[in-house]
Image (cartoon, rainbow, N blue to C red; front, side, top):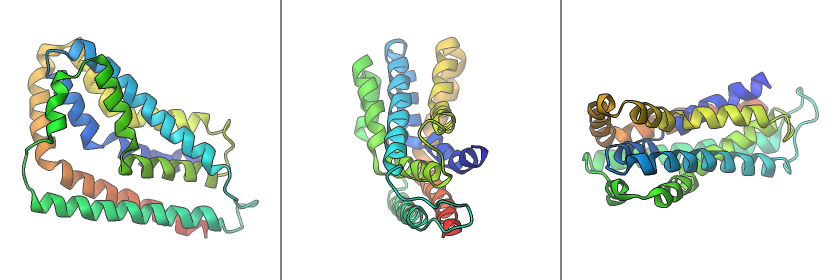
Length: 222
């Protein structure tokens, strides 16, 4: 189990450092509706992460796995290499976009997050987990758990760790802001400006590193 947690922890960190949900969180927290929308957004984000990783963990159980640690795990290793390659392709796309559009302008839907009610906030947070990046990370986590020989029941603790780590960067600012709104407001503004300027470049670097790590894990299984 420790090995499984070690394998999925970098993937969970990549989920946690996803700039879009963090930016959406900040926009909501700086809005007049933060007291009614922030917690539903957090619930939707946590539930989305959990659903994605559970679905792909269960799906991965249908894949053939090596019966012995000494034998190659060809199917899972190959799929991990493919997923890692897809993440690297996304990283290259994000990097090109960052170079072409070095602007701090946020997408229109993100700007509109300050008007989200509770249900809209919950729904958007849930949907953010079906973006290509989020799905690929969920697939990678499911493959890692299957490759380490864990059953669905044995995967519960690693899945809990994955979900908690992945949701931490949304949960922390929400909890701190609701507890101390005046103290957090200037920090949120600074964070918002920095993320808006650098989110594509940061995303590209994270995807590149995680993609290479997943490929390395996949190669090790062959």
